[in-house]
Image (cartoon, rainbow, N blue to C red; front, side, top):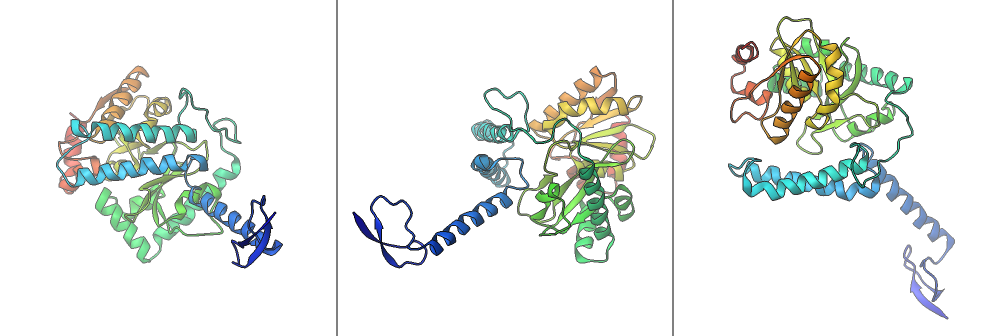
Length: 352
């Protein structure tokens, strides 16, 4: 039995078997359909290239992003905080969906009922090529920041406004700017940086050698922070200049830059979720230094401070917490209240 049916590619009506599944009038139309499917798959992979999330879990990640954006909008339009009882169901939903997406991506270990995605790389060490690509790309980003261009001026203005970091300090720390967009020189691990121009902050080890990097969006769209794709990259950055006084351990990189600009040595932990893993890396390199831990003024930040203080004390470090004034979300927002007086205010609370 045959049926007359229009071709899904060219629209021509043709006869086809009733049991046929594909409605193509010729092999040429079949090839067109095949190429379209391949192109769609490539576009989807390009979209998720910067995310440590498999394609099958992309919907879960999008759901977490939507909940997070909705919560941010609700907080912006009201005087509510994350601790408000009316927001607990929404916060709980955000945590559940976001943690599930992270667990499925393989970022969390020991999650019951969820198998981690295996990596082709074994062990914590990176390949030599990854390190070489990192050094070359950071050098290129640093050179772009040194140029007399609109993007460089915009990035330096952001650093000065947000962190109080001047051009000389930024260049000394290896800070740069990635213009985004397709670039044949871009290493595969830098895929997350392709979406838009980003401030690039290197993660330095205790000797000042770059071991990783994170990017902060200069525009309002897209993820605010991205990191290098693939396993093995560090989550701690040391910004040390041999200064006297305590070392301030911060939750996030821009807070660490603000502390460094204020005249203190700083260590940045890239997010509250890696606090436990960061404790083992900090202890050996900061032995003998007084440590002050400062987190964001939210539920995650308070958990970060508690975990870091407890872990570093157990490791034998001399450590205390720093309380951010009410209403200041993080150290950078505290600095924005009085940029000129902030170094003295920070010195007063860290030396107390």
